[in-house]
Length: 234
Length: 279
Image 1 (spheres, rainbow over the protein chains, first blue to last red):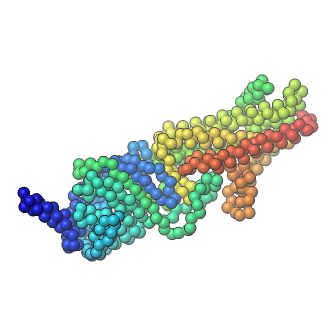
Image 2: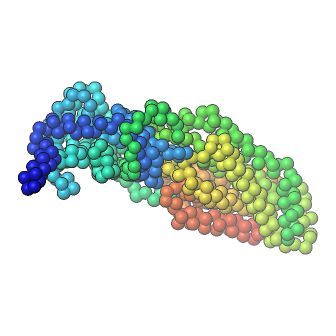
Image 3: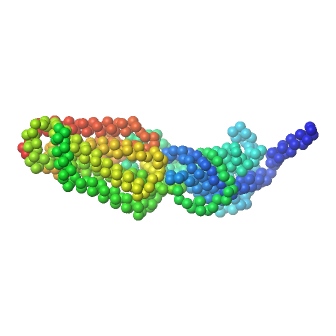
């Protein structure tokens, strides 16, 4: 009995820690395989967009995703707002596809947890992603945070929290931080009611940060979404 | 006094000129709606190019609520003219026809006459705003359907959910009524000085145009006087489409407009009481 228990314990330990301290390439490939097992999903979401110049209430709707890069937020009769295509809301779009060079950057602490840090550089220059830095929980084989430097859209930081759908590497909560350009329209065009300018005067900067928080309430995974879903108008 | 009010209303709505205003409101809203139906997408894309660079907005942007807002935005510059057409004629028109003296031979005070003229102009203004609401909002909703509304300010992008819009429109139209009542009282005031309706109508528009330019010019010189100009507060209806709604600022604007209305009315009574009426 004790021997069986010891063997089982060892098996669990070795399974969980199979990448601990192991090859960064192997870890990255295993993670990528886990992420790419999801071909499509639809999920009920609550989305909060926090950008200095945007005042948007919490949006609820259905988010559709189909690999590699199709995404649509459906809000019946309402408007949906998503970042431009190259800053997609899914992890699969923020890690480089094809041949990559994986660089081990050691370990770091993230939210009180020890995580493996690695930098991934695509071998081909053609894509929009220049560099992705990942904070990976080796035990659960999940990316907890990514920092993606893109060619045209600045740096996109994504922080994930997992729960019920961790086996598919699908998060329950995602916060995306991104660089945004400033927004301005001439006052002569908008004829603002100046009394309502309750925004504090801000420093004039070329770029500013914004974030999108998404809470995934329920996923339906790999049900075979048709392309037509992404062509529909709300 | 009620009987006198009925007579006033009868006079206003008997004149074909009164209906020109309703016709103009219908024509302008129809033209804007037609333009938006045919080429609204490019108009919206132009206005939203700063946002479209970074975000992808899906859904019916061009909906009745947005069109209603665009129409309101453009019409509240023209509506003062339509209000002045009737209110500016109230005393000067009577003087021109020679009936002012005749009216005052009846057992009513001059104050009462001014009050009746003001109330009848207010009723006309209210009906005009209601018609504007029907044309700008309800016809647009019928033509373009419903949806969430985007409000573009010079420094902010505001999205208002469709379930949160109708009360805002109701409040905005009520505010517009108050703003136009101020214009009506100004036109009645100027009307007391003239014996011909053209003068007060043009003078009212002149005052509105000059003060609107002052209210919108971003020059430090004018910033001191801006809070005291009624034209600065006339666009307070836009506050209802902000997030959060600046209730304190709207309350202040209402107070300024009411003060101007009472002020114009009081000055009219003061002047008219002493006026030597010869016709």
